[in-house]
Image (cartoon, rainbow, N blue to C red; front, side):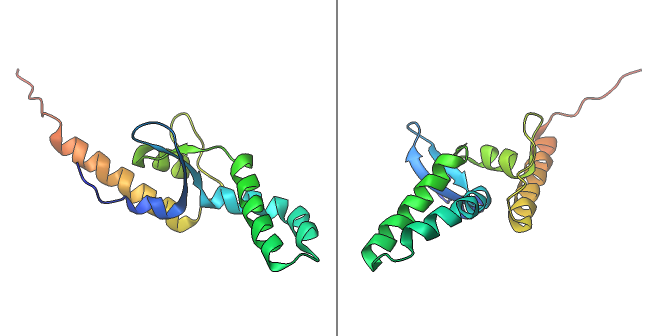
Length: 125
């Protein structure tokens, strides 16, 4: 098993461990969208705040954004399904085109590999 992290991790924030193998992760596109919707409240809280309070409020702003978006299981297949969709999910409307492009490339490469491994059947007359 490879210990090298998948490049798709750069489009997700790693949260708490969900089980012995996977983390709850959050799409950075979704997080940025959620943060934007919470911006007015955040700016009101830090308007006249000192630096330490601003730091704490910024962390709370991020934590609130994490609570506002669904987590994704921290593995390649879940990342791909979130970014570009699957039979059960629509593609992420907040993910960058760069993230979606990488996910498409990985899905395509995976399908190519699977088709090469599939046994060929021969027809007899």
